[in-house]
Amino acid sequence: MRRSARAKPQAGNRRRFLDRLVLALDPRHAQHSNRYEAALRARGKLLAGIGDVLLPGTRTGADGPLIRVDDAWINAQPAVAECLRIALDKLRECAERTPDKVFIHYGEDGVQLTFAEFVDRTDRFAGGLLAAGVKPGEAVSVLTRNSLVSAIAMFGIWRAGCLFAPINFNFRGPQLSYQLADTQPSALITDPSFCDILTEIGADACPPRLVIHTPQPGDHDHTDASFPARFGNSTFLDFAALCTHAHKAPPVAPSPFDLANIVYTSGTTGPSKGVLQNFRWINQYTF
Image (cartoon, rainbow, N blue to C red; front, side, top):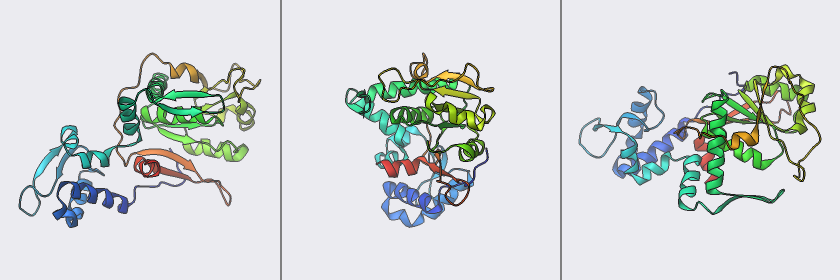
């Protein structure tokens, strides 16, 4: 997959995370975070999520003890566990703690979803994407003006282990075709109001799967437009059907430094540039 800007987690962000991790264990050893970052990097890891990791404060010596960090160990260290949580974890915690509390009120159509309903819908949507052949790690683009569809799609894409790639709904022509070619999504979530715009760039520019949200009569975004029976080589999938798919996606456990989004700049002075954002950025922006 080509990307215009390959944003990587900054060293400063890794340092701050590791400083918090070390301080949570033993504040006396905060100044030694370089050593632990080097130990993680040597094993190809960005954080102490899995594997053998040097941890301070429990034994004297130059290197400290070598212990295995697993889910049980993390859960026994509340401050460390908090560092590792991402938006998906926070959502699930809220659904378990207050399942019947309203999570989303979509005023345009008067729709409300509780935490439990939203989690169930996004879990099934993710399961539907995977059953349709979308693979974890692939990008899924979203082109719609409907913010409820966007929210369900975003969390559902994350639950499938995929990369959320929203498209500015004002893009058309060369800007739109460039972003689709640059992102190379496995699927595009859209609605009939964009049929003419997608036809304009050519059906062959579209990804192999088109997930269509079809507003019903009375919905604020209802339109008489519709996609033709065939649209290039793309396979049509129904958004509402994916939200009620029979099987939920299997659990995923992205780390704070795994990629969450690819968001494109406006392209004012040149081609839009894809900015990669990890879950740590989402955490800091959200919480």
